[in-house]
Amino acid sequence: MTRDPDWRLLLPRQVRELPADLAAVVALVGVVNLAVFLPGVSETPLRDVLGLPFLLFVPGYALMAALFPEAGGDVSGIDGIERVALSFGGSISLTPLVGLLLNFTPWGIRLAPIMVAMSGLTLGLVALGARRRNQLSPTERFSVPYETWLSDARDELFDPETQTDAVLNVLLVVSILLAVGSVGYAVAVPKDGEAFTELYLLTEGEDGELVADGYPEEFVVGESKPLVVGVGNQEHQPMNYTVVAELQRVRVENNSTTVLEERELTRFSPRVAHNETWQTTHEVTPTMTGERLRLVYLLYKGAPAGEPTVESAYREVHLWVNVSQSSQSESIRQ
Image 1 (tube, helix red, strand yellow):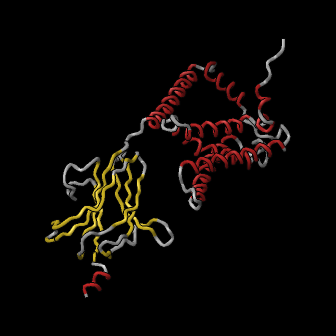
Image 2 (cartoon, rainbow, N blue to C red):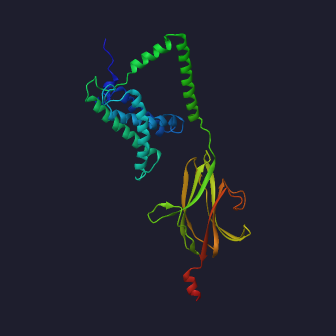
Image 3 (cartoon, rainbow, N blue to C red):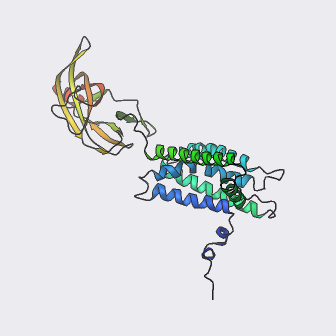
């Protein structure tokens, strides 16, 4: 009777020869990337449940595997507790460093670039760690004593020396299950924070970056100048918005503002997902002249119920501008 072929023979030799703990790291990298990028799964709490321990522990563990391939008994090695503690510390150091480097790249600090960078770094450290371990003799290599741990745990749980140990073991298991369940529930059903929407104006700086500075103040009627309008949704649900841009002539007396004349310039109707930002460039083209006119942007959830006003808007931002007649028109009149 022939034996079924070992499926592991289908894998590359380098993968077949990976130590069990490093093979688990590679498998976890693959599973986390599926949870983050796979449609239908990336929107579930599974992404956070797997992603958080991945970023906080796995890259650091791969780093420790590359730095310390020796067993804990060696002079240059570290024991299991030290390896775990340094793994957390290494991950906490590596993740911000990768984010800082990505900040200076065209990809920026976003989910996809961070996952690709951290996964690539982790796999590279795994390859280095496996190579360094294979250069040592089997007795010198670090290995995780899974069988010893399982045997000790089984004896401790199911064959305790005293009744007191049995009670303590039960309490320990219950405590661990409660802790894991509490953390899982907190991740799977997070409390909604404060719900709000941001409305802002930006301009393009000399280097092409968008900045909250250098807003245009002097306009000529009929000529356009760009402003970038942005809406950030933190309402914990997708939202339909209306942004109304108006140029108003106002009178300010005793801390009271009265609109004397207004011209609607344009409207935008974006739909913005939660935790997403919508931006567009508005070419502001004034249609009336005057000193200290108010260029105002009014934000509404949905469509405005009536005449758009500052008082009825959910959010508003404004600039004070001066609009003059064109120099060409002035020369013709002269």
